[in-house]
Image (cartoon, rainbow over the protein chains, first blue to last red):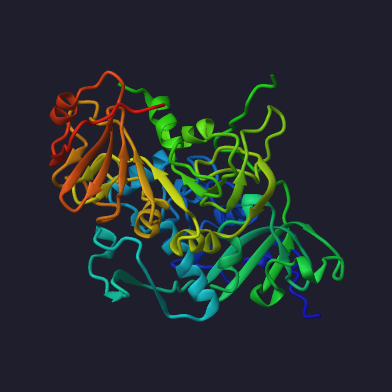
Amino acid sequence: MINKKVNNISEALEGVSDNMTFMFGGFGLSGIPENAIANLVKRNIKGLTCISNNAGVDDFGLGLLLHQKQIKKMVSSYVGENDEFERQMLSGELDVELIPQGTLAERCRAAQAGFPAIFTPAGYGTEVAEGKEVREFDGKMYVLEHAFKADYAFIKAWKGDAAGNLIFKGTARNFNPIMCGAAKITVAEVEELVPVGELDPNQIHIPGIFVQRIFEGENYEKRIEQLTVRQKA
Amino acid sequence: MLDKNGIAKRIAKEVKDGYYVNLGIGIPTLVANYVRDDIEVEFQSENGVLGMGPFPFEGEEDADIINAGKQTITTLPGASFFDSATSFGMIRAQHVDLTILGAMEVSENGDIANWKIPGKMVKGMGGAMDLVASAENIIVAMMHTNRAGASKLLKKCSLPLTGVGCVKRIVTNMAVIEVTPKGFKLLERAPGVSVEDIKKATEGELIIEGDIPEMKL
């Protein structure tokens, strides 16, 4: 067994520095790497390019990095729930690249799987395709999109072991599995780090080969963005 | 004239047995409430779930189980979770049978604009561009006119596009319309709405052939 376990959060984030490109798993606030984000806030490194489907809310998730003006550029598909984000974008302090969600996912997976680029129909004929190579396959038009290049991927899983094997829960899975191995270094935080051998190899979602560092996170808030319930009859 | 629930009710009739369906935010979400209960349908949410159920009871919500609108949801027996690439794979490769989404504008050649108002609303397209570029069967659910009373069915979209030539069918508070190579073809009118009313509220080319029946809800 190749050991990926690190002893603490500062070891997990060793090597991060100004002007790097990071990937963050999560959809909305679900499945975000809360511990890694908190540590990046503490380190207060600047000039970051962040690849993440969303940009958090004003006081949580990537919103915490935005608040300290640590982010230079965001690459996202939807950034609707964040006033500070909107302010920085409209004032020109923050560079924003908005791309379709499926394109974001596939640019991650391409990086993970060793493809330099992929063709997708999403965005053809829109401003998203401006300046990009397009090509026809079987009578339909596609846009060439390149694999992401990132220094670190920060992802969050439900369970993991020291070998780096991961299991995700519910829709907190989202972008997390496809960012594993899509950056030079993948840092996985898990709610529960179980002894090696306890996870059934048949049930593992991401094999440890895609993960360089793993640790058990703490104090998960798991904030709900849109609590929606029905009343019992 | 229909309200939002009326639009959802009419669209629900387009949902057939055995369909996998993706519902957008807003009016499309309401469609789930009106699908016949003697057919089997599975709802997909692009953040990574098939087999979505109703909202949870108070106290039973789970932060790890949400829909694409970030609302807490439940799952039904037979449900599954998957990553975002798999999710858009099932959309792109047309395994999802029907996509229902809202729009700010639709043009007579089937272009759709629903993600950006320059200088005003720049929240991002989310999964909308993937959905419209890939789905074979797209129904747009929207009001026929905007809040200022201007038509949303245009000759040409004025807002930045989400997709080109992709909309096949539109259900509004006034009408059911098919997008054809010649323009908007009027299929049905809402209760209490005349063909003349629809004509007035439609900026794009409206094709009227024969008697236009009233919608059955």
